[in-house]
Image (tube, rainbow, N blue to C red; front, side):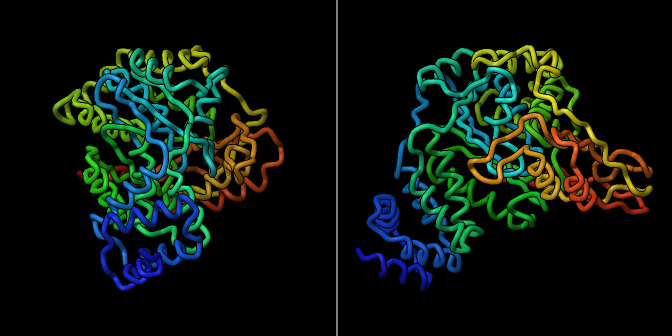
Length: 433
């Protein structure tokens, strides 16, 4: 086989077979094929797309390019949840303990964030003492005992994806549905889950700005999951404004605690109940979404969801008392209100800009080397559809620096006010099976 022939074949719109895709991915992972040929291959995919079978074969080849996690010693059906990301996306912190409280095993492998705020691990490390440096044996033991544990990404998972992603980033081939779908799904499949629940975001704070693009991506990922034998469901949810009120690491932990108590923001609570219901059904702990939702609502009401969170924290060295006393979480030195400049109704909050504002405060990483300030961030006091009077606080800035003028300017730039009442955006657009 010659790489140039395969590039030409794909450029001309023909389908590659499994052996050809395996040849490309294996050769690139080993360093036998140069970047410039893979760049041409990625661009050919960008313009010609891929069939469903090609997408499955590409994903499987990337899975097989490195280590695969064996979760077979964990009892029950392991369900993994993946979000395509956004601003204030606190769902994992709530969902893990919530579904664990109804006996669904959550074996979560998480990374650190590069962007608006930290990743799930960074957020959890806002809890004093919490750590993810545990052995695989301990990880499995904790999930079997407590139904939940989180471990840092270990081993060499999907090295082909890492190489290809870095290349796509500099060759204008990031936004290709087959390449995005296979990248996300290869990591989920290599991480060993039996079933996968996907939260695909759409709106200005999401990777997929348009609903039809989010739908296409969701369908592609669900079909790949099914193609490799993993039961997969997807929810398309709104990210036109930040989810919940909190954007920042310790702030999001506090919001997760509130939500597990049944006192969280309406949108975050609803999304967690929707995703959680799908996870419970995928794990075969309930036969319908209505039954699953009732189970989740009951463990919030009777306190088991919060207890599950405390058990999870203490098992990994964290101070579980933060669940009862969130003042033990890192706290910023300055709380600065951003007052509304006029009366009216909030018509838009550009999620992406709020995310940038949080990153400027130190809540996220601009580069891999950046240090995160776990205490800082932004609390939204007004969401889309809310009425506002001049002087009301739009957001509260939590900062360790008194100079927040640049952040205030970004906040003002992200908020729009109109005279007529507007409706809050739809939270959940579609479910893809």
